Length: 423
Image 1 (cartoon, one colour):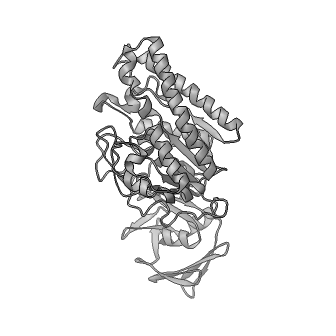
Image 2 (cartoon, rainbow, N blue to C red):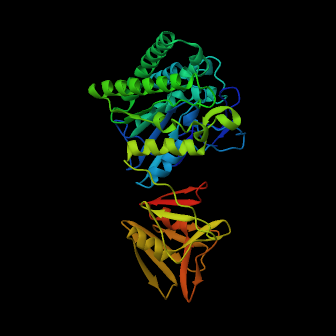
Image 3 (cartoon, rainbow, N blue to C red):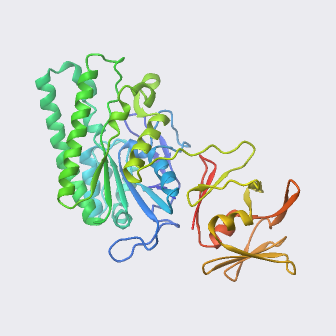
């Protein structure tokens, strides 16, 4: 499950408008609960993402009804391919390193903070609500197995306007000032995050140069030099943290954008430096390779089928395709049973299938408006039915009722039209 921090809009760079998911905070139903020591009570892999509009997933043209689909959303998909995964997105559009430092300090202190207290004049209108709930975010971060951070782009942005007019000495001097600012703020952030979740891995992204050579031939080599220097600086900082016992690695995003600025950002069409979908997918691939050592591009749903089903990281390939009935997804019960290694017993006397997995039992009766989940009746809108495929008739059941009744984690991705099921 991916959880944006709060309902509302986000703005940055004067034109950022996007909708956050309607949730009652990241600790809403479905989140894992913390045990003593701050670790999850289940085997769910918990990712917390912090940072600026790259973490939010902004693209130009978004409005109040838009839903971002950035690298964070894709990280959830990748995680679900490896097992139970939950992502909590704490991104704030327009955030600088100082703002992130202020926000994380408030989280550490378990106190509320105003929008201006996070960062004066920040344009993301969710910031006030995010700040008011900062104390609650500490428990969320304490559960994290992984924390990702994108920050520094808004600090470094001035170089895209000034690099061409500065000589080498002036540019080097200003870069060093910005690097020192980054180091001071991000070091406090990392140390505070480590104090909240000592076992969590922290991944820092470097910063890409968004300006293509075509736009400014004089500034382009200087910006590439600044970007490369930034990457080296972040890598050095991560090494220092690791030597001091804090697990910090770098997601080397910047090199992927070199020479691809016009296709990976919106700079050409909208004069906007945020990533395109191609850019966000590239970022996700870099992060995924840092986390899991691989990135799997999701397959498109077959034409004529309502959705794809992925069980324990593998696509369910079967001639008995899922069907949509009254906005509910139905699947052949035996396909799910076989995919997860459950057991099923059919009763001709009661026209029912009893499915067991571990200590969980679901009894599905043909034509009944209820199913029994661990002995308790659960109402369903549409009963199980026999569905003809070729010359065969298969028992089709509501996917969510069966999978959740057996204790599985079930997450539907509307963008991909895909259900991820993890036992």
